[in-house]
Image (cartoon, rainbow, N blue to C red; front, side):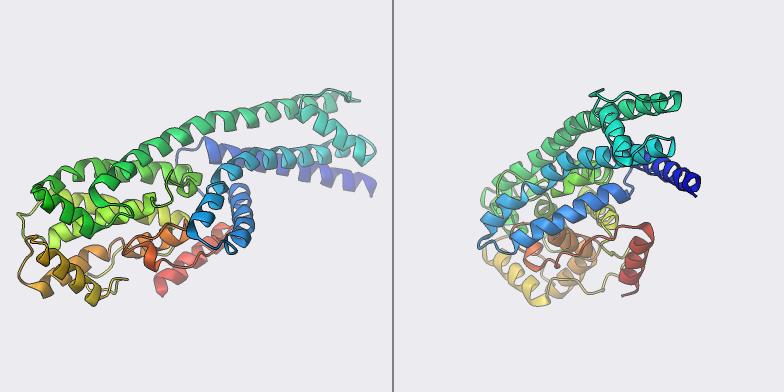
Length: 370
């Protein structure tokens, strides 16, 4: 009976070690967005703890300062969880190979993992496991060290355009303010200079924020800025440019919208936020007709050239917005984005992302059906 128990301990420990190593590789090395149980469990659990405190914050600024620690702390905790789980796996493996008592198996695993070397392996096979243990300990830490520079490089690329948007669209940024400012300096045509670089920006965040999902929760340097609300402002400005402003048609604005909604949808899908991949142009959106009419009147009273057929303008705007509406609103809620018109001012309540692939598929299917 004892032999069977040791065999089970050795097998279970080996499975745990392989699972954690593969999780680390898929989190850090694999260049695609793939949910990883261990990584997602760490961040979801930490988000729950942060959420308990965030609900007590009296102002958004106080909550923002606290939540700014969430993603960096999660990244620091992740290798600690990897090391702890691998140590637990080697403890079971060592005990299965005959190291007694269990406490001694744990000390041997920890000594090897942290390369302290104060416990000598008693046999050939425990020597082998100790060497592998030490190698994995160094490898896991090295993975995170190499991971951090790429995280911060992607963060800096993202935030450069977010910061520049403040000059054009105010703080908090809004599409109506962006259009009015360009009209006030008689450079409404300069809006068309934006679409190329923002199309590239959307392509960049799609890749980085799914392959390195912690980036989604890295907050801007100012509590009034957010990559989510910036995306919403640019997409709304492009949608109004195509639907409402009385300007010659511009294909690049339409391409920017397409790049934007594809990017936001894929990031939203990674976090199990349900979106419709093929919405109808007249499907409901979070913007009311009265809100659109109010913005139309503001632009017209400021002297901005708008198309005469207000009803058609609304229909065209709705047809563009429906492509990114659900993803934008869902991501604003997920990230606790700061106030911004037509995005975080109507964001959905945070829902814990499911941990397993099966639960993730169920939620996405239920969202699509709803």
